[in-house]
Image (cartoon, rainbow, N blue to C red; front, side, top):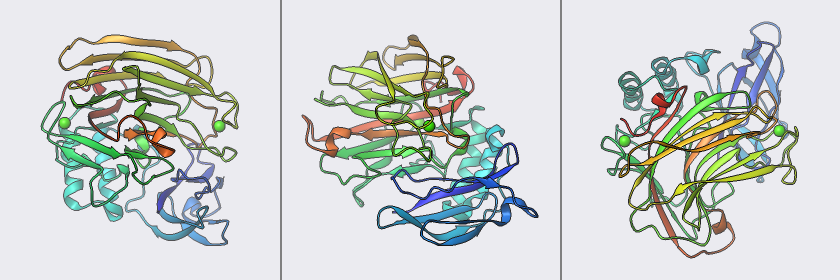
Length: 376
Ligand SMILES: [Ca+2]
Ligand SMILES: [Ca+2]
């Protein structure tokens, strides 16, 4: 197993940071430090707990691997050309595509980068929009990540059953699949897509559409199909998602919201709230739009709208105020995951032994129209 981390300068220009890209307890986690004299973060040196060290530049990608299941070793650092601009989060989609093209040395082919640019021009001003219309499970975004098991059997692949256009992404999970990132899952994630990250204080719209096959059977335990997941703070052993959408045994779409005003969250300190949003309808695309005012305090708010492709007509299904995320350190943010996560299968069987689900038109933006999953 390997992971990724990024080195960058803080928004106040006064510190350098490396962000943890791992989910496992003990994955490398390097704290921020002051900007050194001279070239600043470019010559910032950090020592890891195993005694290793490396020189890293601003925006460099850092590849690491766990040793003995808990301590990481730097195995390579990959300079980026050009370095990422500080204001990446504010760049329009077209410029984001150019930034992604600059990452081609990491994991993107030239053709994939070209597709990113084409998509950015053709589509809305959304911060992120994944339509899968280039017939790739990355939707042309080389920084999209996957938590999956069981090669060569594909867990996550593009499929010609779309909400709009020609393609969507299909996630498949089987009881007995080897656990990945601490659970039984087949999920796409945006850990390395900084523009999609969120934290307390942000106001963000999210849109996506989910299709359940007509053969979908009710199960005794939930299926988690979309997550808003923050990284851990240094003082935290593990962490719940801030929110996740699930299919419940009672046939409802349920949003679970977890929040904590304490800086160092423990399982006992987290406040949990659940909202049933709508009925689950196999054989239909379910369109969702969420507006989050992310806050670990009373300013938090979640509005949600819903429709199906067979019964178009948006209706608001949630208007909830109050805390909806965690009190985290300045450089701790959250990312998105979608697909299938079946926590019950970590420990035993349930009433079903396999699951297939489809997602399309996953978007992050500043307005309903930017993220509307019913339009291409
Ligand atoms: Ca599509
Ligand atoms: Ca925290």
